[in-house]
Length: 381
Image (cartoon, rainbow, N blue to C red):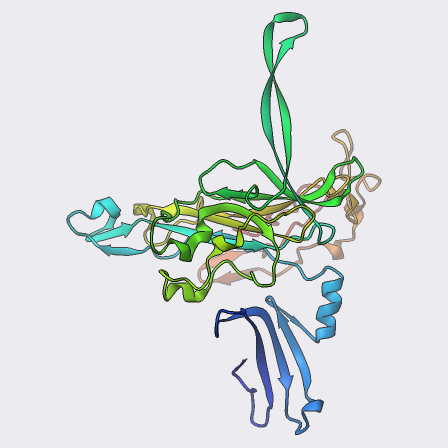
């Protein structure tokens, strides 16, 4: 499939072609894969057509070779974008029994209760395609006090369990789940622990649709706060845009992905649900407050490294409390010439009745206190 524009001026013969994934057995239901190619097709011989530019997952590349090279080098990363609820609330006209559905936020206006939910597919290959799922938590173990056997203390211990099947690695929304869950490789770090990445969810989602609802299967992904399954080419996403057309006979039912297959030493995918219940209130006018409404998840290294990896960063500086951070022997950045400072010496400016002697672009003195007229941040005069 292709999309306009064909070019920017008369005579251009270049077209962006978007690549789509055709799910077998689902009819003409095409899903984009995030890859588009700008093809120059002005030559009469198709063998002479060339690819001018490549667009993949939000970034441009000069050629497919460059994309392949950066992918092999591990430079094609997934960017996590914060998901914050904001904007205008959903509202209806205030009527007699309206307050059972929300709060009055203005004259004759009701802010209606609703939920926000996002489902993420995390195709995380930790040190290779063969991964294992580990769950860790805490437990109190009663122990006798050595010097007073008639008394007990509660010792806090770590519980560890390797999850073997998809059913074991599926956690219903609102149910119990391990506080630490991570995908690990078969390699160990320096200290003998499996090298892994932890999935830490930040979510306070509302309840899912009741499973006895006739349309619940169209949104069955919302049943789970986290599920780990085998990665399969035939399971590229957890839902379909066509589910909205007929939620009573959905094109795709995510719960079919969970069929108790083994997840030990397999190529795995984690499915993460993050969301929140929103009961609009007066402070959501005119816009929903973003603070406190951010949800998502973290991918955190868990024994993947031998120590905190920033210790190996270039130009890192370590000094103790009793050392002078402004000394060149302790802090090499203290001796950078003034030309390397972040804040240039700009003339005074005035705009819209606001005047200031200097534009704040950054810190003017890395080692010590800021220079006069230079702030520590980017906001405010």
